Image (spheres, rainbow, N blue to C red):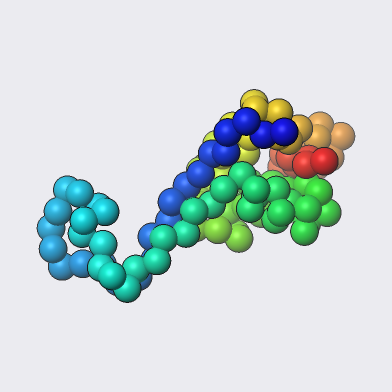
Length: 99
């Protein structure tokens, strides 16, 4: 069982013309917040056959490849997934295996 879920918050919508240090208060009412939870990443991996690369995660979300790799590494450290060393291809892509 997963003890705590990591999440990334992504804000959609047009930017406000107000200049404010508090992002929450400067958000326009039309903006929607999307939270990328570990569960959503697991569902994506399962949809892709149980394994995913940082490139796969980046292509399906707004994360950069570096952010996606960092997120997958955190999930691997928590024991949510494993690095599948047998599936590393010649290009060096790392596959994260979800069971």
